[in-house]
Length: 306
Ligand code: CP
Image (cartoon, rainbow, N blue to C red; front, side, top):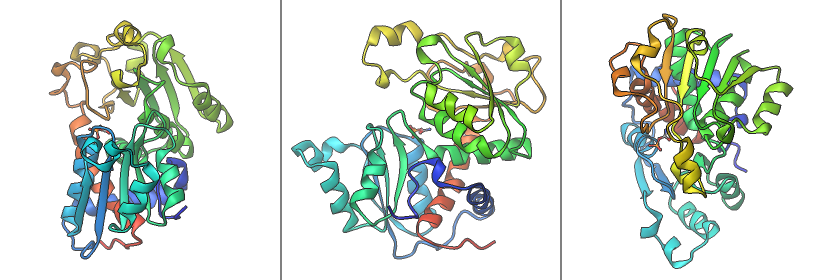
C-alpha cells in the first residue's frame, strides 16, 4: 500500500492528525494556491455524494490541479462488467491521486493493493470515512478550542454510520467521553465498543435522547438513518423517525455546545435549529474544503507553507 494513501483514520498518528489540522488552518486563511499545477486527481464515486465529491473537486481546483472522474458509475464501463481492479488500474494510468467512494466495505483498501497511486477513501460502505473525520476534528477544535476531554454524544444510526465509526477511532488520542444514543437495531457495533474499552475510552449507551444527555454534552453529532443500508425496508420505516432534535430541546444546553452532522439530513434536525448559534453543520461542511486541501497535499507529498 502506498504510505500516502488514507484508507482508515487509524492510518494517521496523533502527530499526523494535528499536522493536518494545522495545514487546514493555513488553507482556511489562504485557500487558493498553485500547489497542484500539472497534477491530475481522479474522483471515482460509485455511491452518491454532494459534499465529499464537490469539496474534493473544489480543493483540486483551488490548488490549480485538474480533476477527472465520475459521479455515477452506471455511465462507466463498470456497467459493462469491468471489475473494480481493472477500473483502478486504468485510472492509475491517468491520475496522480485517486479519491474513491464505494458501497463495499474494504473497497478502498483493495484499491491500494492493485495500484501504487495513492488512494483516499471517501467512504466505503458502513466502514470508514476518514476525510469526514478530519473535517469533524477540525470543526470540533475550532468550536471548542481543544480536542481534549470533551463529552461527545453520537445520535441516530450508529450501526451503519461510517462517520461515527471513524470519529471514535480518531478521538482515542484525546481522552473523550462518548454517549451513544440509538435504538437497539442501530446500536454501536460491538467492534467499536471493544475498541473503546481497549483504548480506555469511556462510553455510555442510551435509547433515550434525554435532556440530561443533551445538557451535559460539548458536541452533539446527529446522523441520518441511511435507507440505502437496509435490506429490509420495513425495518427502516420502523426506526427512521426515532431521534429528532429541535430548537426547544437546546434551551438548557451548555454555552459551548455545537451541533454537528455530516449531512445530508432528512428530518433528524428540525429546520428551526438552523438559526440557533449552536448549529454548526453548514460551517462543518465548509471546513471540508480546507481539510481536503490538506489531505490532497499530504497524499502527493506537497509541503504546505504559511
Ligand atoms: N458527509 C458526506 O459524506 O456527505 P456526502 O454524502 O454528500 O458526500
